[in-house]
Length: 170
Image (tube, rainbow, N blue to C red; front, side, top):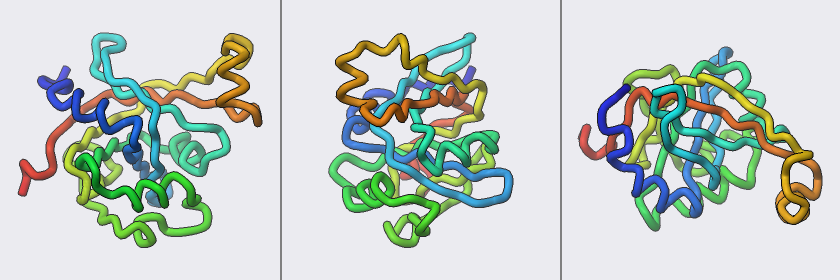
């Protein structure tokens, strides 16, 4: 287990409801990012993990299925609002989100997927497991508010293999 994977957890959890980026590079070498506002950081199978929720309908879902890893890129509080909006409302099927949002890719330290240079906090994760939500077990009020189109989420469990503040490296 990497030491201090939780060191910046408070920063991650404070930004998560406002939006963070999940970035993935698939087996063909294509890279995409998407804004997420749901996730967990914790321990599963004695390993530090970040669990990301991605809907079936998202282009990122298809890419994650053929990837080995992903990165979680956390903007500094109050920054990158327009980039988060673009990455959360536009599809990587149709546009280059990095170019459109003015984001720069940078090599990660331990995984294939790059990080977003403009973000201050990085989590590098290797995909361990995926799990589908069981719609029959979701309470009706939550189905009504979050799943009117029956487009539930897949949970991607990523073992955190590195985490750091980008500014520490500059």
